[in-house]
Image 1 (cartoon, helix red, strand yellow):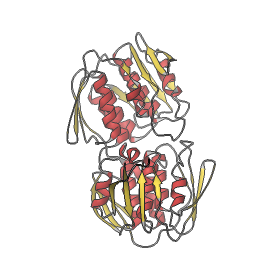
Image 2 (cartoon, helix red, strand yellow; image 1 turned 45 degrees about the vertical axis):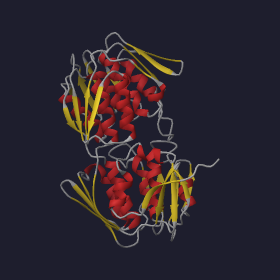
Image 3 (cartoon, rainbow, N blue to C red; image 1 turned 120 degrees about the vertical axis):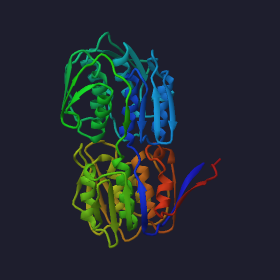
Image 4 (cartoon, rainbow, N blue to C red; image 1 turned 90 degrees about the horizontal axis):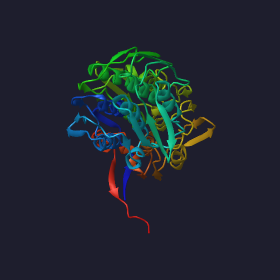
Length: 422
């Protein structure tokens, strides 16, 4: 079994390039099913979730070719309509294929999707979107089965802000008959990026990136070329690595406007953060100071995906602070593992209270989810002695070249073989 061996890191230094966004690439790849001609997706991260998505596309009859950071998807004339458990169970985003397949044909089914165990993330929002557009949806034999003659535009009022449900509504509505209005839509940059790709394919979408999205259905879509936006959570992770270890790093191929809440917290802690036209510089030389309390919220609030890595950076900060999680109810899976390093954290419902400690010490750690796994690595880099992190498959779901990037910045870590226990 391979595990990550981590030692206390010297101050980080150097530059890193930020890859395309995981949460941007996945819905765009699902949208390729809607197109009648090939799609070229640039800056597509080489991560497990993208590999799973390409496997789904191939299972549906599409041809997928990766050359470096570019993926070309040639859709099938008559795509298959079922996504089996072996593929659907690998990630939550697989459910987005339902809307795309229904918009392309008249039937679609999928085994219940999987993903990180960070909360309920119920599929009922997705089912409600499809039913509103005229689909018949039912659950049978641990799968979701959908049928529709012609999807018809309508007004969709989302009961809560949901990125996945917003993207699903857009995918299903772009070829529906008539107009669709999505209210209480998610405003995340990744939603707007999906709309830019679909617009390049011939879709008529207005308001993506705001709370009201209006879509006028078109008969069909053509393929297009698109460059996935930079991964703001990957950028936040490496900024937090610098905050945890000290030093100075420059992130290229990204920008700070979508990361303002994270940059604000890091600056309040004592980091020097500077934004360039397509770069972010972070430096930390003195001690960190605990910031004001942090509360996650839908965009443009503090991103839930950055909560764990920011927490990991602040374990040795002077003072105390609280993290309140409002998006997912089980987003503190990393806390018991951080405490194994000597962190002082208490959890009360959806709030974690952190009191800074003078030093952390090495420990054997296990990642249980994507962002929490990255947080364990950052904390271990700032701990005295050696640590090991298992469960690296979670981290590989969402980070392209995670270990090599940290190594290039001077971090002390490497993958090693650990004998399996009998």
